[in-house]
Amino acid sequence: MCGIFGCALREGNAAPIIHAALKRLEYRGYDSVGEATISDGKLYVKKDRGKIDAVHKIHNLDDLPGSIGIGHTRWATHGAPLQVNAHPHLDCKKQIAVIHNGIIENFTELRLELEARGHVLKSKTDTEMIAHLIEDGLNVGNLKFADAVLEAVKKLEGSYSVAVISTNEPDKIVCARNESPLVIGVAAEGLYCASDIPALLPLTKKIVIVENGELVTLSRDDFEIRKIVDSSIVERKPKLIDWSPEMAVKDGYPHFMLKEIHEQPQTLRSTLRLQEHYLDLMATFLERAREVFLVACGTSYHACLAGSYMFSKLAFLGTYPVIASECVEQHGKSIGIDSTILAVSQSGETSDTLAAVMTARERAATILGLTNVVDSTLTRVSRVYIDQQSGPEIGVAATKTFTSQVSVLAQLALRVAKKRGKVSQDEMDYLGERLKNLPNDAETIIRRQEEKVRHIAKKYKDAKAFLFLGRGISTATAYEGRLKLMEIAYVPAIALPAGESKHGPIGLVEPGFPVVIVCPKDETHKTVIGNIMEMKARGASVIAVVEEGDQEIEKLADDYVEVPKGIGEVLSPILFVIPLQLLAYCMAVEKGYDPDMPRNLAKSVTVK
Ligand code: F6R
Image 1 (cartoon, rainbow, N blue to C red):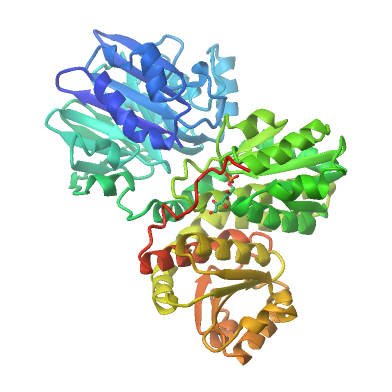
Image 2 (image 1 turned 120 degrees about the vertical axis):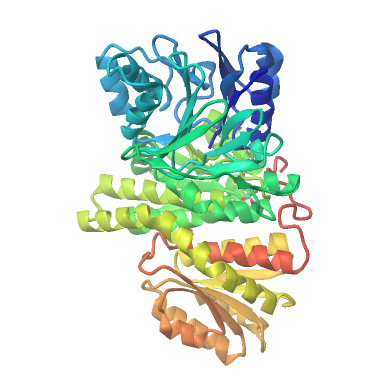
Protein backbone atom coordinates (compact mmCIF):
# COMPACT_ATOMS: atom_id res chain seq x y z
CA MET A 1 0.00 0.00 0.00
CA CYS A 2 1.36 3.43 -0.96
CA GLY A 3 -0.14 6.88 -1.41
CA ILE A 4 -0.09 8.65 -4.76
CA PHE A 5 -1.03 12.23 -5.58
CA GLY A 6 -0.80 14.47 -8.62
CA CYS A 7 -1.85 18.03 -9.41
CA ALA A 8 -2.11 20.13 -12.54
CA LEU A 9 -2.69 23.74 -11.43
CA ARG A 10 -3.77 26.67 -13.55
CA GLU A 11 -1.18 28.77 -11.72
CA GLY A 12 1.07 28.67 -8.68
CA ASN A 13 3.47 26.09 -7.32
CA ALA A 14 2.43 22.46 -7.21
CA ALA A 15 5.13 21.23 -4.79
CA PRO A 16 3.71 22.55 -1.47
CA ILE A 17 0.25 21.24 -2.43
CA ILE A 18 1.70 17.82 -3.23
CA HIS A 19 3.63 17.85 0.04
CA ALA A 20 0.50 18.66 2.08
CA ALA A 21 -1.51 15.96 0.27
CA LEU A 22 1.21 13.38 0.93
CA LYS A 23 0.94 14.17 4.64
CA ARG A 24 -2.74 13.26 4.41
CA LEU A 25 -1.79 10.03 2.66
CA GLU A 26 1.04 9.17 5.03
CA TYR A 27 -1.09 6.53 6.80
CA ARG A 28 -0.83 4.48 3.59
CA GLY A 29 2.92 4.16 3.89
CA TYR A 30 5.81 6.08 5.32
CA ASP A 31 9.14 4.49 4.56
CA SER A 32 10.09 6.82 1.68
CA VAL A 33 8.73 9.86 -0.08
CA GLY A 34 9.27 11.66 -3.36
CA GLU A 35 7.96 14.36 -5.67
CA ALA A 36 8.50 15.25 -9.32
CA THR A 37 7.46 18.45 -11.07
CA ILE A 38 7.87 19.91 -14.54
CA SER A 39 8.90 23.52 -15.17
CA ASP A 40 10.06 25.08 -18.45
CA GLY A 41 10.12 21.68 -20.11
CA LYS A 42 12.45 20.20 -17.48
CA LEU A 43 11.78 17.45 -14.95
CA TYR A 44 12.69 18.06 -11.30
CA VAL A 45 12.78 15.26 -8.74
CA LYS A 46 13.40 14.98 -5.00
CA LYS A 47 13.09 11.70 -3.15
CA ASP A 48 14.57 9.84 -0.23
CA ARG A 49 13.93 7.16 2.34
CA GLY A 50 12.30 8.18 5.61
CA LYS A 51 9.11 9.80 6.80
CA ILE A 52 7.81 12.87 5.00
CA ASP A 53 8.86 15.35 7.72
CA ALA A 54 12.37 13.92 7.91
CA VAL A 55 12.83 13.97 4.13
CA HIS A 56 11.39 17.49 3.92
CA LYS A 57 13.83 18.70 6.58
CA ILE A 58 16.78 17.52 4.50
CA HIS A 59 15.56 18.23 0.97
CA ASN A 60 12.85 20.93 1.25
CA LEU A 61 10.12 19.28 -0.81
CA ASP A 62 8.39 22.65 -1.32
CA ASP A 63 10.92 24.38 -3.53
CA LEU A 64 10.50 22.22 -6.63
CA PRO A 65 9.43 24.58 -9.45
CA GLY A 66 6.37 24.29 -11.68
CA SER A 67 2.61 24.06 -11.45
CA ILE A 68 2.30 20.40 -12.40
CA GLY A 69 3.65 17.44 -10.49
CA ILE A 70 3.23 14.11 -8.74
CA GLY A 71 4.16 12.76 -5.31
CA HIS A 72 4.37 9.41 -3.56
CA THR A 73 4.58 8.09 -0.04
CA ARG A 74 5.85 4.54 0.01
CA TRP A 75 5.09 1.29 1.78
CA ALA A 76 7.91 -0.91 0.49
CA THR A 77 6.92 -4.03 -1.41
CA HIS A 78 9.57 -4.71 -4.05
CA GLY A 79 12.92 -3.32 -2.99
CA ALA A 80 14.06 -2.18 0.45
CA PRO A 81 13.20 1.31 1.69
CA LEU A 82 16.21 3.06 0.14
CA GLN A 83 16.52 6.32 -1.79
CA VAL A 84 17.06 4.46 -5.06
CA ASN A 85 13.77 2.59 -4.59
CA ALA A 86 11.74 5.65 -3.58
CA HIS A 87 9.25 6.93 -6.17
CA PRO A 88 9.03 8.73 -8.61
CA HIS A 89 10.99 6.52 -11.00
CA LEU A 90 12.38 7.85 -14.26
CA ASP A 91 13.16 6.54 -17.74
CA CYS A 92 16.68 6.52 -19.25
CA LYS A 93 16.36 10.03 -20.68
CA LYS A 94 14.84 11.49 -17.49
CA GLN A 95 11.79 12.74 -19.40
CA ILE A 96 9.18 10.62 -17.67
CA ALA A 97 8.36 10.27 -13.96
CA VAL A 98 6.11 7.50 -12.63
CA ILE A 99 4.56 6.84 -9.24
CA HIS A 100 2.76 3.60 -8.48
CA ASN A 101 0.70 1.89 -5.81
CA GLY A 102 0.20 -1.85 -6.18
CA ILE A 103 2.15 -4.93 -7.14
CA ILE A 104 3.14 -5.83 -10.69
CA GLU A 105 3.39 -9.59 -11.04
CA ASN A 106 5.22 -9.81 -14.36
CA PHE A 107 7.79 -7.11 -13.62
CA THR A 108 10.77 -9.48 -13.87
CA GLU A 109 9.91 -10.52 -17.45
CA LEU A 110 9.22 -6.94 -18.49
CA ARG A 111 12.41 -5.72 -16.85
CA LEU A 112 14.51 -8.37 -18.62
CA GLU A 113 12.96 -7.48 -21.99
CA LEU A 114 13.70 -3.79 -21.39
CA GLU A 115 17.28 -4.50 -20.35
CA ALA A 116 17.74 -6.62 -23.47
CA ARG A 117 16.68 -3.55 -25.48
CA GLY A 118 19.36 -1.47 -23.74
CA HIS A 119 17.38 0.22 -20.95
CA VAL A 120 19.26 0.78 -17.70
CA LEU A 121 17.16 0.27 -14.57
CA LYS A 122 18.56 1.36 -11.25
CA SER A 123 16.08 0.27 -8.59
CA LYS A 124 14.80 -3.07 -7.36
CA THR A 125 11.17 -1.96 -7.68
CA ASP A 126 8.36 -3.28 -9.84
CA THR A 127 7.61 0.36 -10.82
CA GLU A 128 10.69 1.66 -12.58
CA MET A 129 10.17 -0.48 -15.66
CA ILE A 130 6.84 1.29 -16.27
CA ALA A 131 8.74 4.52 -17.00
CA HIS A 132 10.92 2.64 -19.48
CA LEU A 133 7.93 1.00 -21.17
CA ILE A 134 6.42 4.46 -21.67
CA GLU A 135 9.77 5.72 -22.96
CA ASP A 136 9.68 3.02 -25.67
CA GLY A 137 6.12 3.99 -26.56
CA LEU A 138 7.10 7.64 -26.98
CA ASN A 139 10.46 7.25 -28.65
CA VAL A 140 10.21 3.97 -30.57
CA GLY A 141 6.46 3.77 -31.13
CA ASN A 142 6.08 7.53 -31.73
CA LEU A 143 2.93 7.49 -29.63
CA LYS A 144 1.35 10.44 -27.91
CA PHE A 145 2.00 10.58 -24.15
CA ALA A 146 -1.41 9.20 -23.03
CA ASP A 147 -1.28 6.44 -25.65
CA ALA A 148 2.22 5.48 -24.56
CA VAL A 149 0.97 5.12 -20.97
CA LEU A 150 -2.05 3.16 -22.20
CA GLU A 151 0.13 0.73 -24.15
CA ALA A 152 2.49 0.36 -21.18
CA VAL A 153 -0.22 -0.45 -18.65
CA LYS A 154 -1.75 -2.97 -21.06
CA LYS A 155 1.42 -5.01 -20.55
CA LEU A 156 1.15 -4.99 -16.75
CA GLU A 157 -0.24 -7.95 -14.83
CA GLY A 158 -1.18 -7.25 -11.24
CA SER A 159 -2.54 -4.32 -9.32
CA TYR A 160 -1.72 -0.70 -9.93
CA SER A 161 -2.72 2.87 -9.71
CA VAL A 162 -0.11 4.91 -11.53
CA ALA A 163 0.34 8.60 -12.23
CA VAL A 164 2.81 9.79 -14.85
CA ILE A 165 4.21 13.11 -16.04
CA SER A 166 6.44 13.67 -19.06
CA THR A 167 8.35 16.58 -20.51
CA ASN A 168 6.99 15.56 -23.97
CA GLU A 169 3.55 16.90 -23.00
CA PRO A 170 4.31 18.94 -19.89
CA ASP A 171 0.72 20.07 -19.25
CA LYS A 172 -0.69 16.63 -18.57
CA ILE A 173 -0.82 13.96 -15.93
CA VAL A 174 -1.81 10.51 -17.14
CA CYS A 175 -3.04 8.05 -14.55
CA ALA A 176 -4.50 4.55 -14.70
CA ARG A 177 -6.05 2.03 -12.39
CA ASN A 178 -6.35 -1.70 -11.93
CA GLU A 179 -7.49 -2.75 -8.44
CA SER A 180 -5.48 -0.16 -6.47
CA PRO A 181 -7.65 2.88 -5.71
CA LEU A 182 -7.58 6.10 -7.73
CA VAL A 183 -9.76 9.20 -7.57
CA ILE A 184 -9.80 12.50 -9.45
CA GLY A 185 -10.56 15.89 -7.93
CA VAL A 186 -11.94 18.78 -9.97
CA ALA A 187 -11.49 22.37 -8.75
CA ALA A 188 -11.37 25.90 -10.10
CA GLU A 189 -7.62 25.97 -9.35
CA GLY A 190 -6.85 22.83 -11.36
CA LEU A 191 -7.22 19.06 -11.37
CA TYR A 192 -5.86 16.43 -9.00
CA CYS A 193 -5.48 12.67 -8.76
CA ALA A 194 -4.97 10.70 -5.55
CA SER A 195 -5.17 7.30 -3.87
CA ASP A 196 -8.11 8.33 -1.77
CA ILE A 197 -10.75 10.98 -1.23
CA PRO A 198 -9.37 12.34 2.07
CA ALA A 199 -6.22 13.47 0.26
CA LEU A 200 -8.39 15.67 -1.95
CA LEU A 201 -10.98 17.03 0.45
CA PRO A 202 -9.22 20.23 1.53
CA LEU A 203 -8.78 21.02 -2.19
CA THR A 204 -12.16 20.08 -3.61
CA LYS A 205 -15.34 18.18 -2.87
CA LYS A 206 -15.97 17.38 -6.57
CA ILE A 207 -14.69 13.86 -6.97
CA VAL A 208 -14.62 11.32 -9.81
CA ILE A 209 -13.98 7.70 -8.87
CA VAL A 210 -11.79 5.96 -11.44
CA GLU A 211 -12.85 2.35 -12.05
CA ASN A 212 -10.68 -0.69 -12.74
CA GLY A 213 -9.31 -0.81 -16.26
CA GLU A 214 -9.55 2.96 -16.85
CA LEU A 215 -6.97 5.53 -17.88
CA VAL A 216 -7.41 9.24 -17.21
CA THR A 217 -5.68 12.15 -18.86
CA LEU A 218 -5.69 15.26 -16.67
CA SER A 219 -4.95 18.72 -17.92
CA ARG A 220 -5.17 21.94 -15.92
CA ASP A 221 -8.87 22.40 -16.68
CA ASP A 222 -10.30 19.11 -17.90
CA PHE A 223 -10.06 15.34 -17.76
CA GLU A 224 -10.77 12.48 -20.14
CA ILE A 225 -11.42 8.89 -19.08
CA ARG A 226 -10.77 5.98 -21.45
CA LYS A 227 -11.07 2.24 -21.12
CA ILE A 228 -7.63 0.64 -21.23
CA VAL A 229 -8.86 -2.35 -23.20
CA ASP A 230 -10.16 -0.50 -26.28
CA SER A 231 -9.46 3.22 -25.70
CA SER A 232 -13.19 3.97 -25.74
CA ILE A 233 -14.21 7.18 -23.99
CA VAL A 234 -16.08 6.94 -20.68
CA GLU A 235 -18.37 9.80 -19.68
CA ARG A 236 -18.47 10.40 -15.93
CA LYS A 237 -19.43 13.51 -14.03
CA PRO A 238 -17.88 14.46 -10.68
CA LYS A 239 -19.89 13.66 -7.52
CA LEU A 240 -20.13 16.01 -4.59
CA ILE A 241 -18.61 14.37 -1.51
CA ASP A 242 -19.77 15.89 1.74
CA TRP A 243 -17.72 14.15 4.40
CA SER A 244 -16.73 15.57 7.75
CA PRO A 245 -12.93 15.66 8.32
CA GLU A 246 -13.27 12.69 10.71
CA MET A 247 -15.20 10.63 8.16
CA ALA A 248 -12.65 11.58 5.55
CA VAL A 249 -9.68 9.88 7.22
CA LYS A 250 -11.78 6.79 7.70
CA ASP A 251 -12.82 6.80 4.05
CA GLY A 252 -16.46 7.30 5.02
CA TYR A 253 -16.55 4.44 7.56
CA PRO A 254 -17.51 5.20 11.16
CA HIS A 255 -14.44 3.37 12.50
CA PHE A 256 -11.05 2.23 11.24
CA MET A 257 -11.85 -1.30 12.38
CA LEU A 258 -14.84 -1.52 10.04
CA LYS A 259 -12.83 0.04 7.23
CA GLU A 260 -10.09 -2.53 7.77
CA ILE A 261 -12.57 -5.43 7.87
CA HIS A 262 -13.89 -4.15 4.53
CA GLU A 263 -10.37 -3.89 3.12
CA GLN A 264 -9.81 -7.63 3.43
CA PRO A 265 -10.71 -8.56 -0.16
CA GLN A 266 -8.00 -6.17 -1.28
CA THR A 267 -5.41 -7.16 1.32
CA LEU A 268 -5.97 -10.83 0.51
CA ARG A 269 -5.39 -10.02 -3.15
CA SER A 270 -2.07 -8.47 -2.17
CA THR A 271 -0.92 -11.56 -0.29
CA LEU A 272 -1.64 -13.64 -3.37
CA ARG A 273 0.86 -11.50 -5.25
CA LEU A 274 3.81 -11.96 -2.91
CA GLN A 275 7.09 -12.58 -4.62
CA GLU A 276 7.48 -16.28 -5.35
CA HIS A 277 11.16 -16.07 -4.61
CA TYR A 278 10.71 -15.19 -0.90
CA LEU A 279 7.90 -17.68 -0.38
CA ASP A 280 10.04 -20.35 -1.94
CA LEU A 281 13.12 -19.47 0.06
CA MET A 282 11.19 -19.54 3.33
CA ALA A 283 9.51 -22.82 2.37
CA THR A 284 12.97 -24.31 1.74
CA PHE A 285 14.14 -23.34 5.25
CA LEU A 286 10.96 -24.77 6.78
CA GLU A 287 11.18 -27.97 4.80
CA ARG A 288 14.77 -28.63 5.91
CA ALA A 289 14.36 -27.75 9.57
CA ARG A 290 14.68 -30.40 12.26
CA GLU A 291 12.00 -28.60 14.26
CA VAL A 292 9.91 -25.51 13.56
CA PHE A 293 8.53 -23.16 16.19
CA LEU A 294 5.78 -20.76 15.14
CA VAL A 295 6.17 -17.92 17.62
CA ALA A 296 3.80 -14.98 18.17
CA CYS A 297 1.42 -13.18 20.54
CA GLY A 298 -2.33 -12.57 20.53
CA THR A 299 -3.98 -12.58 17.13
CA SER A 300 -0.70 -13.42 15.41
CA TYR A 301 -0.46 -16.49 17.66
CA HIS A 302 -3.89 -17.57 16.42
CA ALA A 303 -2.57 -17.26 12.87
CA CYS A 304 0.31 -19.54 13.93
CA LEU A 305 -2.11 -22.03 15.40
CA ALA A 306 -4.03 -22.17 12.11
CA GLY A 307 -0.65 -22.38 10.33
CA SER A 308 0.42 -25.38 12.37
CA TYR A 309 -2.68 -27.31 11.24
CA MET A 310 -1.92 -26.30 7.64
CA PHE A 311 1.72 -27.44 7.77
CA SER A 312 0.67 -30.71 9.34
CA LYS A 313 -2.30 -31.44 7.06
CA LEU A 314 -0.78 -30.37 3.77
CA ALA A 315 2.95 -30.92 4.20
CA PHE A 316 3.09 -33.50 6.99
CA LEU A 317 5.36 -31.05 8.77
CA GLY A 318 4.97 -31.00 12.54
CA THR A 319 5.43 -27.51 14.02
CA TYR A 320 5.11 -26.08 17.51
CA PRO A 321 2.84 -23.04 17.75
CA VAL A 322 4.16 -21.16 20.78
CA ILE A 323 2.93 -18.09 22.65
CA ALA A 324 5.99 -15.87 22.49
CA SER A 325 6.03 -14.92 26.18
CA GLU A 326 6.26 -18.62 27.05
CA CYS A 327 8.73 -19.61 24.36
CA VAL A 328 11.91 -19.26 26.38
CA GLU A 329 10.45 -20.94 29.48
CA GLN A 330 8.98 -23.78 27.50
CA HIS A 331 11.51 -24.40 24.74
CA GLY A 332 14.53 -22.19 25.50
CA LYS A 333 16.81 -25.10 26.36
CA SER A 334 15.85 -27.27 23.41
CA ILE A 335 16.15 -24.58 20.74
CA GLY A 336 19.48 -24.88 18.94
CA ILE A 337 21.31 -24.73 15.64
CA ASP A 338 18.87 -27.14 13.97
CA SER A 339 15.79 -25.21 15.06
CA THR A 340 13.88 -22.82 12.88
CA ILE A 341 11.77 -20.04 14.37
CA LEU A 342 9.08 -18.53 12.22
CA ALA A 343 8.13 -15.38 14.14
CA VAL A 344 4.82 -13.83 13.13
CA SER A 345 4.24 -10.22 14.14
CA GLN A 346 2.12 -7.64 12.36
CA SER A 347 4.13 -4.77 13.83
CA GLY A 348 7.45 -6.60 13.89
CA GLU A 349 8.08 -4.84 17.21
CA THR A 350 6.23 -6.90 19.83
CA SER A 351 8.57 -7.20 22.75
CA ASP A 352 7.67 -10.78 23.74
CA THR A 353 8.08 -12.02 20.18
CA LEU A 354 11.41 -10.25 19.77
CA ALA A 355 12.65 -11.59 23.13
CA ALA A 356 11.93 -15.15 22.00
CA VAL A 357 13.62 -14.46 18.66
CA MET A 358 16.72 -12.98 20.33
CA THR A 359 17.10 -15.99 22.62
CA ALA A 360 16.72 -18.35 19.68
CA ARG A 361 19.27 -16.31 17.73
CA GLU A 362 21.79 -16.56 20.56
CA ARG A 363 21.31 -20.32 20.35
CA ALA A 364 22.11 -20.20 16.61
CA ALA A 365 18.58 -21.03 15.44
CA THR A 366 17.43 -19.88 12.01
CA ILE A 367 15.05 -16.92 12.28
CA LEU A 368 12.32 -16.36 9.71
CA GLY A 369 9.90 -13.44 9.98
CA LEU A 370 6.40 -12.72 8.75
CA THR A 371 5.42 -9.10 9.31
CA ASN A 372 3.49 -6.16 7.95
CA VAL A 373 6.21 -3.58 8.59
CA VAL A 374 9.33 -3.58 6.45
CA ASP A 375 12.30 -2.25 8.38
CA SER A 376 10.78 -3.29 11.71
CA THR A 377 13.11 -4.98 14.18
CA LEU A 378 11.82 -8.39 13.13
CA THR A 379 12.83 -7.80 9.51
CA ARG A 380 16.31 -6.80 10.65
CA VAL A 381 16.94 -9.90 12.74
CA SER A 382 15.40 -12.42 10.33
CA ARG A 383 17.41 -14.48 7.89
CA VAL A 384 14.46 -14.28 5.50
CA TYR A 385 11.33 -12.24 6.02
CA ILE A 386 8.05 -11.88 4.19
CA ASP A 387 6.22 -8.57 4.08
CA GLN A 388 2.55 -9.53 4.20
CA GLN A 389 1.53 -6.26 2.52
CA SER A 390 -1.71 -5.53 4.34
CA GLY A 391 -1.02 -1.80 4.50
CA PRO A 392 -1.12 0.08 7.80
CA GLU A 393 -3.65 -1.21 10.31
CA ILE A 394 -4.86 1.61 12.53
CA GLY A 395 -7.66 -0.05 14.52
CA VAL A 396 -6.08 -1.59 17.62
CA ALA A 397 -7.85 -4.90 17.02
CA ALA A 398 -6.04 -6.84 14.32
CA THR A 399 -8.39 -7.85 11.48
CA LYS A 400 -6.97 -7.57 7.97
CA THR A 401 -3.49 -8.43 9.19
CA PHE A 402 -4.78 -11.73 10.65
CA THR A 403 -6.38 -12.94 7.41
CA SER A 404 -3.26 -11.92 5.48
CA GLN A 405 -0.99 -13.79 7.91
CA VAL A 406 -3.07 -16.94 7.56
CA SER A 407 -3.10 -16.60 3.79
CA VAL A 408 0.71 -16.35 3.72
CA LEU A 409 1.07 -19.35 6.04
CA ALA A 410 -1.26 -21.33 3.75
CA GLN A 411 0.89 -20.48 0.75
CA LEU A 412 4.01 -21.54 2.64
CA ALA A 413 2.38 -24.82 3.71
CA LEU A 414 1.43 -25.52 0.10
CA ARG A 415 4.98 -24.89 -1.04
CA VAL A 416 6.49 -27.15 1.61
CA ALA A 417 3.90 -29.80 0.66
CA LYS A 418 4.95 -29.53 -2.97
CA LYS A 419 8.64 -29.82 -2.11
CA ARG A 420 7.88 -32.92 -0.08
CA GLY A 421 5.59 -34.41 -2.72
CA LYS A 422 2.79 -34.61 -0.18
CA VAL A 423 -0.07 -33.21 -2.23
CA SER A 424 -1.37 -34.46 -5.52
CA GLN A 425 -1.50 -32.12 -8.49
CA ASP A 426 -5.30 -32.20 -8.31
CA GLU A 427 -5.27 -31.10 -4.71
CA MET A 428 -2.70 -28.37 -5.47
CA ASP A 429 -4.87 -27.11 -8.33
CA TYR A 430 -7.99 -27.19 -6.18
CA LEU A 431 -6.36 -25.31 -3.31
CA GLY A 432 -4.75 -22.88 -5.74
CA GLU A 433 -8.20 -22.09 -7.15
CA ARG A 434 -9.70 -21.70 -3.67
CA LEU A 435 -6.86 -19.38 -2.68
CA LYS A 436 -7.45 -17.27 -5.77
CA ASN A 437 -11.14 -17.03 -4.88
CA LEU A 438 -10.56 -15.89 -1.30
CA PRO A 439 -10.80 -12.14 -2.06
CA ASN A 440 -14.15 -12.59 -3.84
CA ASP A 441 -15.42 -14.89 -1.10
CA ALA A 442 -14.42 -12.34 1.55
CA GLU A 443 -16.28 -9.66 -0.41
CA THR A 444 -19.39 -11.88 -0.55
CA ILE A 445 -19.34 -12.47 3.20
CA ILE A 446 -19.07 -8.79 4.01
CA ARG A 447 -21.75 -7.85 1.52
CA ARG A 448 -24.27 -10.52 2.49
CA GLN A 449 -23.70 -11.07 6.20
CA GLU A 450 -22.94 -7.69 7.76
CA GLU A 451 -26.59 -6.79 8.29
CA LYS A 452 -27.36 -10.21 9.71
CA VAL A 453 -24.45 -9.93 12.15
CA ARG A 454 -25.73 -6.51 13.26
CA HIS A 455 -29.05 -8.12 14.22
CA ILE A 456 -27.29 -10.90 16.10
CA ALA A 457 -25.22 -8.33 17.99
CA LYS A 458 -28.40 -6.44 18.95
CA LYS A 459 -29.98 -9.67 20.19
CA TYR A 460 -27.03 -10.73 22.37
CA LYS A 461 -25.67 -7.37 23.43
CA ASP A 462 -26.54 -7.88 27.10
CA ALA A 463 -25.13 -11.41 27.37
CA LYS A 464 -22.77 -11.66 30.33
CA ALA A 465 -20.39 -14.13 28.69
CA PHE A 466 -19.84 -16.11 25.48
CA LEU A 467 -18.40 -19.49 24.63
CA PHE A 468 -16.62 -20.02 21.28
CA LEU A 469 -16.11 -23.55 19.96
CA GLY A 470 -14.41 -25.05 16.94
CA ARG A 471 -12.81 -28.36 16.03
CA GLY A 472 -9.52 -28.95 14.23
CA ILE A 473 -8.26 -25.86 12.46
CA SER A 474 -11.47 -24.04 13.45
CA THR A 475 -10.18 -23.97 17.01
CA ALA A 476 -7.87 -21.18 15.85
CA THR A 477 -10.85 -19.33 14.37
CA ALA A 478 -12.81 -19.74 17.61
CA TYR A 479 -9.86 -18.40 19.65
CA GLU A 480 -9.59 -15.38 17.38
CA GLY A 481 -13.35 -14.65 17.48
CA ARG A 482 -13.25 -14.78 21.25
CA LEU A 483 -10.22 -12.45 21.50
CA LYS A 484 -11.90 -9.88 19.25
CA LEU A 485 -15.08 -9.91 21.32
CA MET A 486 -13.22 -9.58 24.62
CA GLU A 487 -10.83 -6.87 23.57
CA ILE A 488 -13.26 -4.42 22.02
CA ALA A 489 -16.71 -5.28 23.45
CA TYR A 490 -15.37 -6.27 26.89
CA VAL A 491 -17.49 -9.40 27.04
CA PRO A 492 -15.81 -12.19 29.03
CA ALA A 493 -15.51 -15.18 26.72
CA ILE A 494 -13.97 -18.61 26.59
CA ALA A 495 -12.80 -20.43 23.50
CA LEU A 496 -12.06 -24.11 23.29
CA PRO A 497 -11.62 -27.00 20.92
CA ALA A 498 -15.23 -28.23 20.96
CA GLY A 499 -14.20 -31.64 22.26
CA GLU A 500 -12.87 -30.06 25.45
CA SER A 501 -16.14 -28.38 26.39
CA LYS A 502 -17.50 -31.49 28.06
CA HIS A 503 -14.39 -31.77 30.26
CA GLY A 504 -15.52 -28.89 32.43
CA PRO A 505 -16.61 -25.67 30.71
CA ILE A 506 -20.04 -27.04 29.74
CA GLY A 507 -20.91 -26.46 33.40
CA LEU A 508 -21.25 -22.78 32.56
CA VAL A 509 -24.04 -23.36 30.06
CA GLU A 510 -27.55 -22.49 31.15
CA PRO A 511 -30.65 -21.44 29.19
CA GLY A 512 -29.88 -18.57 26.85
CA PHE A 513 -26.07 -18.81 27.22
CA PRO A 514 -24.62 -17.78 23.83
CA VAL A 515 -22.34 -20.34 22.21
CA VAL A 516 -20.65 -19.43 18.93
CA ILE A 517 -19.73 -22.51 16.92
CA VAL A 518 -17.47 -22.47 13.86
CA CYS A 519 -18.68 -25.19 11.49
CA PRO A 520 -16.96 -25.55 8.12
CA LYS A 521 -18.11 -28.54 6.10
CA ASP A 522 -14.97 -30.56 6.72
CA GLU A 523 -14.32 -33.89 8.38
CA THR A 524 -15.18 -32.42 11.79
CA HIS A 525 -18.72 -31.51 10.66
CA LYS A 526 -20.54 -34.55 12.05
CA THR A 527 -18.81 -34.34 15.42
CA VAL A 528 -19.53 -30.63 15.62
CA ILE A 529 -23.22 -31.40 15.16
CA GLY A 530 -22.89 -33.62 18.23
CA ASN A 531 -21.37 -30.70 20.15
CA ILE A 532 -24.20 -28.43 19.06
CA MET A 533 -26.71 -31.00 20.36
CA GLU A 534 -24.90 -31.10 23.71
CA MET A 535 -25.15 -27.34 23.99
CA LYS A 536 -28.78 -27.19 22.85
CA ALA A 537 -29.72 -29.90 25.36
CA ARG A 538 -28.58 -27.51 28.11
CA GLY A 539 -30.53 -24.57 26.73
CA ALA A 540 -27.63 -22.72 25.04
CA SER A 541 -28.38 -20.22 22.28
CA VAL A 542 -26.25 -21.46 19.40
CA ILE A 543 -24.85 -18.96 16.90
CA ALA A 544 -23.32 -20.98 14.08
CA VAL A 545 -20.94 -19.88 11.34
CA VAL A 546 -21.68 -22.29 8.51
CA GLU A 547 -21.19 -22.82 4.81
CA GLU A 548 -24.06 -21.61 2.62
CA GLY A 549 -26.89 -24.11 2.50
CA ASP A 550 -25.73 -26.20 5.47
CA GLN A 551 -29.33 -26.95 6.40
CA GLU A 552 -28.46 -29.54 9.00
CA ILE A 553 -26.82 -26.94 11.22
CA GLU A 554 -28.99 -24.02 10.15
CA LYS A 555 -32.03 -25.92 11.48
CA LEU A 556 -30.35 -26.57 14.82
CA ALA A 557 -28.87 -23.14 15.40
CA ASP A 558 -30.73 -20.21 16.96
CA ASP A 559 -28.86 -17.87 14.65
CA TYR A 560 -26.43 -18.46 11.84
CA VAL A 561 -24.24 -16.61 9.37
CA GLU A 562 -23.00 -18.09 6.13
CA VAL A 563 -19.73 -18.13 4.21
CA PRO A 564 -19.52 -19.24 0.56
CA LYS A 565 -19.54 -22.97 -0.09
CA GLY A 566 -16.57 -25.21 -0.70
CA ILE A 567 -13.69 -23.39 0.99
CA GLY A 568 -12.43 -26.67 2.42
CA GLU A 569 -10.82 -27.24 5.75
CA VAL A 570 -7.33 -25.77 5.58
CA LEU A 571 -8.25 -22.34 4.25
CA SER A 572 -11.42 -22.03 6.30
CA PRO A 573 -10.08 -19.73 9.09
CA ILE A 574 -9.51 -16.96 6.54
CA LEU A 575 -13.22 -16.75 5.71
CA PHE A 576 -14.87 -18.03 8.88
CA VAL A 577 -13.20 -15.40 11.01
CA ILE A 578 -14.75 -12.49 9.08
CA PRO A 579 -18.28 -12.84 10.58
CA LEU A 580 -16.64 -13.08 14.02
CA GLN A 581 -14.71 -9.85 13.43
CA LEU A 582 -17.99 -8.22 12.43
CA LEU A 583 -19.73 -9.66 15.49
CA ALA A 584 -17.13 -8.18 17.85
CA TYR A 585 -17.30 -4.84 16.03
CA CYS A 586 -21.12 -4.68 16.10
CA MET A 587 -21.26 -5.75 19.76
CA ALA A 588 -18.81 -2.97 20.70
CA VAL A 589 -20.85 -0.39 18.79
CA GLU A 590 -24.14 -1.70 20.31
CA LYS A 591 -22.66 -1.36 23.76
CA GLY A 592 -21.48 2.17 23.03
CA TYR A 593 -17.73 1.49 23.00
CA ASP A 594 -15.16 2.86 20.56
CA PRO A 595 -13.82 -0.24 18.77
CA ASP A 596 -10.78 1.64 17.48
CA MET A 597 -9.47 2.49 20.91
CA PRO A 598 -10.17 -0.34 23.32
CA ARG A 599 -9.29 0.38 26.91
CA ASN A 600 -5.97 -0.80 28.34
CA LEU A 601 -4.59 -1.84 24.93
CA ALA A 602 -1.99 -0.55 22.49
CA LYS A 603 -1.45 -1.37 18.83
CA SER A 604 2.11 -2.45 19.37
CA VAL A 605 3.07 -3.97 22.71
CA THR A 606 6.69 -3.10 23.26
CA VAL A 607 6.93 -4.05 26.94
CA LYS A 608 7.27 -7.52 28.43
C1 F6R B 1 -5.47 -8.34 18.94
C2 F6R B 1 -4.15 -7.83 18.65
C3 F6R B 1 -3.02 -8.32 19.48
C4 F6R B 1 -1.78 -8.52 18.60
C5 F6R B 1 -0.57 -8.88 19.46
C6 F6R B 1 0.65 -9.16 18.61
O1 F6R B 1 -6.42 -7.79 18.09
O2 F6R B 1 -3.96 -7.03 17.79
O3 F6R B 1 -3.34 -9.49 20.14
O4 F6R B 1 -2.05 -9.53 17.69
O5 F6R B 1 -0.29 -7.82 20.34
O6 F6R B 1 0.96 -8.08 17.81
P1 F6R B 1 1.95 -8.22 16.60
O7 F6R B 1 1.30 -9.05 15.56
O8 F6R B 1 2.22 -6.81 16.18
O9 F6R B 1 3.18 -8.89 17.13
